[in-house]
Structure formats: C-alpha cells, structure tokens
Length: 293
Length: 190
Image 1 (cartoon, one colour):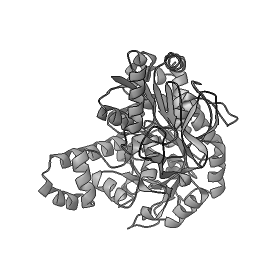
Image 2 (tube, rainbow over the protein chains, first blue to last red):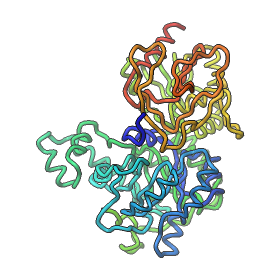
Image 3 (cartoon, chains in turn brown, cyan):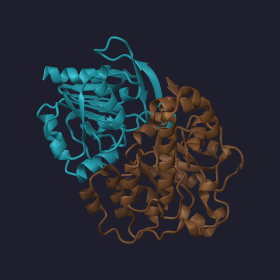
Image 4 (spheres, rainbow over the protein chains, first blue to last red):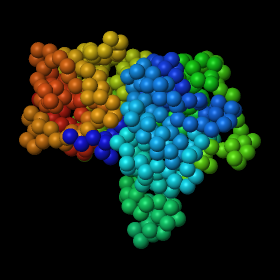
C-alpha cells in the first residue's frame, strides 16, 4: 500500500477537474461553498482583495480556523502557505489538509527558492504565468498548476494572458525537432525531461486550473474555453453582494461552459460582482503575479 | 458501440481515453437529451456532492435512474459509485440515484494523506489490478443480489448488481482497460 505517491497526488487533482475551488476564510463560508457545489475550498486568513487593501504580511491561516473548516465540509480542503515557507507547509500537512497552495497571494518567505515539494506526502498546487514557470514548479514536485492571474482584482485579463501564454508555449514545443528541445529547455528555464514530455503529449503533465481575477460565471466559462481544467475563485465570491447565488452560478457555468443558453440563464440576477481593479493602475510592486521565480 | 461518460465534473477525459482505446465512441453526457442512443454509461470520479447537485439542478436524476433501471449497463468509479448507490453513512443526505443496493461510506479510508495505490485481486480478472484510491469510499453494507468483486481489509471496494458495476478505486488513472472491457462485455450480454 503506497501513500503520497506522485500518482496519488496528481490523482486528486484529476478528480477536481471541471470544478470550482473557492477561497473561504471561515467554516460558515466553507459551508456556503459546499452547498453551491464547490469541489474544494481553499482556507486562508484573508481573501486577496482584503490582503491588497489592508497590506501587511499575509501568512498561512490559523490552524484552528483550518481545522474548523475541515470539520465542517466533506469536500477536500486546501490551504495556502507562503512561497518558500516549508515550515508553514509542514504545519498544514500535519493538520491533514488535502492540498497545499504555495501561493504568491501571501507574502513570500524566500525570494529565491520555492519549497521542495517532493519532500511532502500532501500534494501541492502552484501558480504560473508561462510554460517555463509551470514546468519549474512541476520539477519541484507540484501535482497541479494554476495560472497566477492577478488575484484580488476581479479582473480576468491576467488569467487569460497566462493561460494563453502557457498554451502557446506548449504548441511551440510541439513544432520543434527533437534536437531543438534542449535549447528550448534552456530558454524556458525548465527541466529537459518535462520539456520532452510536453513536446510529445501536447499538454502539461499535471492538471492546469485558471485563477486570479475571476469574478463572474462568464469569466469561469471563458477560462474553460481557453482550455483550462477547472477554476479557482478567490475574492470573486465572498466580496460580491450575494455569495451563495454567485457561487452556484459559477459552478454551473464551469460545467456548461460551452452552452451559451445556460450561461445566459445563470448570469442573471446575481447582484453586484466584486468591484474590479484595472491592472494598468496597479503599481508594479502591487502586482502579486511578480512573486515567485 | 456508443458509451456515454457523465461529464458534469471529474476525471471525464481519462475514462473517455480508455473507452476510445477499446474502440467505443464516447458521448459526453451533461443534459437529459445526451442519454438517448447510448449503449452504456460511465460515471467518473470527482466530487460526489458536486455531481449530485448539478444532476439535480439540470434534471438529470430521473432520466439517469430510469435509463439504468431499464437495463443500461453502467460503471461508476469513486464519486460515480457513491452517486449510483442508495445512501451513505452520513446524516446529511446527498443526491443519489439508488440503482445500486449498497450503503457507501464516503472518504472511508480517510483524507488525502491516506490515499494510496496497491495491487488488488478482482474477481473475473486474471491478474491483479493496480488500483488507485483517492479519498476513497468503501461499501459499508451490501444488499441482496449484489456481488462483491474486490475487497480491501474486508471492506468491499468493487461490486456488481446486474447491469450496474462500481469501484471505489480508479482504473481510469492507470490506463488499465480490463474493467472498462467488463462494462463493454455487459453491453454484449444485454
């Protein structure tokens, strides 16, 4: 009986496909997310929009809070830890969370290194902006990838950019001859064996979700049409005027992403979406996507 | 042969690839009209609460139940097994089809830390199956007329009742097509 294997880690990510993972800060929100049909909830101290507004160092959530959420819902529970903070990750693994997000939304603990995720039995998800970054994280042991987007903005433009960039990177590898792959690996800054694998299969070796700025059912469907396997919604749900209705609509839009009639129906009467931010107005240092290396 | 894969949520692609490898035409099933003209149905792994809620909201429960009761061969893995069954051991009821007479305990082996892979003897299959269990359920109570095809530590993890086959593990994750071949053989029998 082998536990914590690569297959078992990537397998849980496979089971989340076609689903919505929702940021929650307490048990009550977790229950709303589960009722709406979320496949998993992400436990964190503050949603990205609040981290952005309040500033200060954003860290892993209080273990008590995480345990309350785990006790409240029957779906898998994820938790965020700071980039490079392997002790926060050990704490979350000790609590028994089902997945860890080594996330740029929290304040990085290490400005040069990510966690060696092979050392853990719990699976990890990490953010990326392009194929090289995705493959570096997978090379470090990530069992799932998501776009970084620009969290806490309610603006999907960066998630779209990152998804398209990853897809384009994969297509480019598929055109190359085998003798061109080593220099491609050098240019991408990615492990050669993973570059070879992607060139051969035409897809990432792990599940790839969209994240960072999704706020509406149409945003979720857009990301699914761009070829991602599922979506994360952070501030978009609990910073809107009617979280339960919006959460449910986003779940339905993720399943029926290619049915405009259903999308029109679920997009109605959801109240106010979260207030959005224009990326161009964000100072360079306020862009969370720049974190991670 | 046309095989539907319930595509509300979960590891739909892995099932579709195995079925296509066995020569079946795959139909993704999201709405009741997708159920017409299929010879068998696969209910994938995923999150059973999500699949149940979507099936309920989009009018899929009765058509699925009716088709399987009429004899449509069906195979569910993990969440698919939970969705096919009659009830769970939990106090909160969830949407289920009730076409497989078993009581299922969700996440019975534990959370993700307890997820595992192991070789498993399966009745009717000559060599062991390498089985992947992800936050897997087991069968707590088996009704009359249900055959247990595989067990882990005395807990049934694969069962068959007439035209309904279910496993709490994921043959679709290893590329082993022998259990899907059993489903296709059930179509021939029917």
